[in-house]
Every structure is written in C-alpha cells, then in structure tokens.
Length: 354
Ligand SMILES: *[C@@H]1O[C@H](CO)[C@@H](O)[C@H](O)[C@H]1NC(C)=O
Ligand SMILES: *[C@@H]1O[C@H](CO)[C@@H](O)[C@H](O)[C@H]1NC(C)=O
Ligand SMILES: *[C@@H]1O[C@H](CO)[C@@H](O)[C@H](O)[C@H]1NC(C)=O
Ligand SMILES: *[C@@H]1O[C@H](CO)[C@@H](O)[C@H](O)[C@H]1NC(C)=O
Ligand SMILES: *[C@@H]1O[C@H](CO)[C@@H](O)[C@H](O)[C@H]1NC(C)=O
Image 1 (cartoon, rainbow, N blue to C red):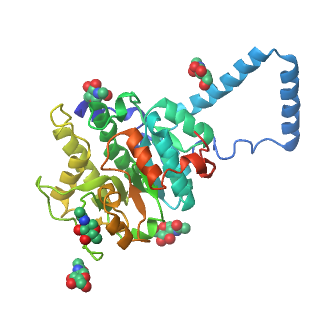
Image 2 (image 1 turned 135 degrees about the vertical axis):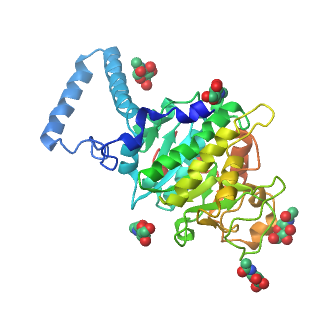
C-alpha cells in the first residue's frame, strides 16, 4: 500500500514549472483559428471525401481522429486540468471509474441545476473514463497515473476499492498545493440546492457526519465526540478544503493513517476510518467545521426516517445514497426517491446521455 501511495511522480504538479498556466492548446476554443472560409473549404473536402472514398477507409479515418484526440488527453496533467476548469480559485472534484459513469452523470445533472458544473473536474481512474468524459466535455477529466483496473475497483470492501479510494487524499493534497479550494464529492450524491452558501467562515476543512441519530437543528459545528470505536464517524464522501496549511496537514495525516492501516482481508477497510483518525488526532492544528445535518444528511438518516425528512423539508442540500450496498440497489433507491435523473434528464448533463 505504501509503495502504491508513493508511486506517483509521473505527473507531479509540483515539478511543473508553470503550474497555473493554462494548457497550451485550449480545448474550449478548438476552432478559433479557423476563418469561415477555411471552414467552408474543409466542409467541401469532407463532402468530396465522403463521395469518393470507399466507406471502410472513411471509417478508419474517423477512428484515427478519435484516437488522436484520445492521445492528447493521455498527457493532460492535473495542473493543466485544474487551471482550465477552476473558477474563482475553486474546483469541484470527484474520482470515477467506468462502471460509475451513470452515477457521475446523475450527480452532474444535479450540479448543473445549481449552475456549478463548469468547475467540475473528474479524476478518471481509468482511460475509458478519461476519453469518454473529455470527448463529450473537453478538458473536464484528468487521469493521474497509474490507472486502476476498473473491474477490480468497484466492489465495496474489496482491496481494489481500497486502492481506488486510498488515492483520494493524495489527489486532494495535490490540488491544495496548486493553490485551489476544492470540494470533493462521491458520485452517489445528488445536489438539491447550492452547497456553497453553507461553507461559511474561513475554516480549513468542512465535512458531514455519517452518524444516523437525529441532532437538534442548532447542533454544534465542532468535530463531534468520538463514537464506539474511539473515533468519530465523519464521512469522507463530501469534503470542502481551503488551500491552507491546516487543510494540507489533515490530508498529509490522512495519507499517513492509510499507510499505517493497509487493507487486509479481515478488516476490509475503506478510507473513511483513516480520515477520521486524521481529524481526531489533529483537531488542534486545523480549523474544522461540521456542516449541518439537516442540509447534508447521511443516507442512513435521509432514506430511513420519513418523520425526520418531513420535519426538515426544504432544508436538504446534498443527499448521499450510502448505507446500502450494491450498484443496482443504489440505482433503485435513487429511482424510488425521484433522485435518478439520468433516464429523463440526460440532456441537462454536460455529458449528455452516456
Ligand atoms: C481507436 O479507437 C477505436 C474506437 O474508439 C478503438 O476501437 C481502437 O481500439 C482504437 N485504436 C487504438 C490503436 O487505440
Ligand atoms: C469568489 O470567491 C470569493 C472568496 O472566496 C467569494 O467571496 C466570492 O463570492 C466568489 N465569487 C464568485 C463569483 O463566486
Ligand atoms: C492494490 O494495491 C496493492 C499495493 O499496491 C497491490 O499489491 C494489489 O494488487 C492491488 N489490488 C487491486 C485489486 O487492485
Ligand atoms: C439549541 O437550542 C436549544 C433550545 O433553543 C438551546 O437550549 C441550546 O443551548 C442550543 N444549542 C446550541 C449548541 O446552540
Ligand atoms: C426519526 O426522526 C424523528 C424526528 O426527528 C426522531 O424523533 C426519531 O428519533 C427518529 N427515529 C430514529 C429511529 O432515529
């Protein structure tokens, strides 16, 4: 595990001499250098090619264009991607492997409804995801090598899943080192409202509680007291960080905690306990802020206590589809609660239908 965490200098943004400069070919304006006349000539050429070339070689031509654009995204670095996507020094980030693309799209639709999609950067964990996202939405996905085996990575509790989630604090630390504020979300989430007004004050790390007991609406914003396992149950699913030394410290300690407690068959760990140890042990060195339960409820509360949901009607901001295992079950539950948006609203996603 520790070897894995150290093994990532291929695209170290810190060694990039121009970390904040935009990518050399700005993917947002791919045609800006073509005059209307050039375009007309190109169009004519395409028609001629379509008429005179045999269909098969036409197909080959199309595929090689696709592949050439794929090549471009292979070497897109985190520093370039962040500079291209960030707005007002802020990024919204998720990490996705191919099996999760439908969830990514669902999450994106909900973010587009709050008009925050432009600052979303997808950290692709495999090349399929990198190419698919960038083909439809140029510049919004980046892959930080090495790529993971997509099939191994999506079973909760497996070593593949641990490997996948253990890269999270490293990615977040890199983004902070580049000077951006960052909101991380798991993609099994749906935004019902804009979360940014809830990130009040100038704290280092903002997070949500994964415990299900109902708290008073005016609960404290301090780190809660430790639970049965001697630590808190803060969710590593939604975190907002400012590029401060306090936030960087928490990410570094999270990485250290993960290295000290590698995955084992017996424990089937995920990255959340390590995040909690990092918070609990370093609470004095960082300015921490617990977000409101009514606005950011755990799935263990939102999907299980109808009375509470009714009582807090209109206060919910981000819903997390956790406290349930399995791909199909998650989709069914979102569906049952009117939160599965991809079937009827794919046109609202910057990726369209996937
Ligand atoms: C080129 O792209 C096509 C379609 O996406 C794919 O089937 C093929 O394997 C790619 N070829 C290479 C050499 O990557
Ligand atoms: C940009 O960020 C500053 C500081 O965080 C904030 O006060 C301001 O409202 C933001 N502006 C926009 C347009 O989001
Ligand atoms: C997870 O990472 C470890 C350490 O790098 C590696 O030995 C193992 O093969 C990986 N397992 C999976 C399923 O990706
Ligand atoms: C919350 O409100 C109750 C009743 O109004 C009050 O007694 C309590 O001190 C408040 N708690 C906090 C943390 O402000
Ligand atoms: C469900 O919510 C109600 C209303 O907030 C609360 O009184 C009750 O204790 C909750 N039930 C459970 C099982 O947590």
